[in-house]
Length: 365
Ligand code: PEP
Ligand code: MN
Image 1 (tube, rainbow, N blue to C red):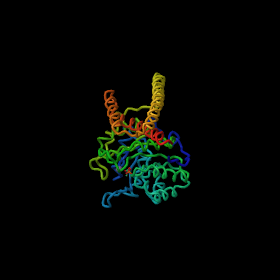
Image 2 (cartoon, rainbow, N blue to C red; image 1 turned 90 degrees about the vertical axis):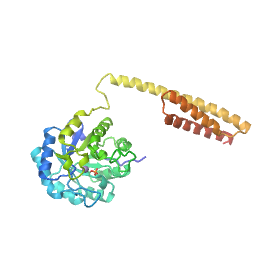
Image 3 (cartoon, rainbow, N blue to C red; image 1 turned 45 degrees about the vertical axis):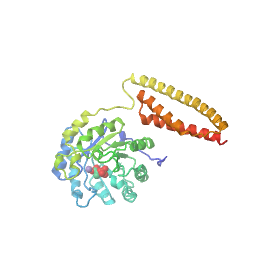
């Protein structure tokens, strides 16, 4: 199991932005014009649909002839969002010169894009440029399913003294589920949460979805998994966006998405739920202990059979018996509403352990 270096992490509640509920970061995939940036920001602010404004100005594109962002000249537009609209601003940086320009233009939060997280040299260059600077950094997961690269990037920022760190889950490019542009592979952010429980973690449903129709569903899943917030791309006119147009929503759509989310907490405010949950968990504990005791008795019987097989010079493995046993268990499980795979898996393991024990007895180990 991977063990991350110990990192000093500032809890989200101590970051210098005021918000309640999940942290919502929104704004266009790319800043395209001063008007598009300011109109989007004003709508978001007016609808109370974002705590922080995002816009990409240096866009890492897969193909060289795609729109690569407006670059440096978009920074004053973002600064206007901060000064005139009153939303903190964040943008993606991919090298030391981006960092320098972003800091000069009072960007509040930097984020590291998924393609950049993949490359330790680039991450280190950005981290070194931030040595001694107190600015929050959000690190998107690398495009490949590699939790070590994700943690490695976070460690590089921690080592130069960044304590306002956050992870952003934006899905992975290899996916078996073709509904998504980037497969969510939820077990990876969950593992990150277990390894670094104090690290704020938000979800970027836009890049997971690739299409706006899926954003609600993914956002809800992230809330159910207790993520700290969402980064959702929004655009005043998504259909004419210069990048990621199918996944962007209008500020109005975003307001509706946020209204339709149901928020769950790890500890229910409903006071009856606590004792009720406790009682159910106790039942589960009893059932599990009973299962273990039954397994112990089963193994004792298996050993007795092993002894008699040894005396009668019979092999431990009897193919017909295992096939019969598995089919019969699967059939019984089906009658009880348990899935075939589940029952087959469990009895596969039980049988493998029984076989091992009998083989040891027969060969006199
Ligand atoms: C983005 O946020 O617009 C972006 C390019 O994201 P990612 O790095 O996750 O692809
Ligand atoms: Mn985008």
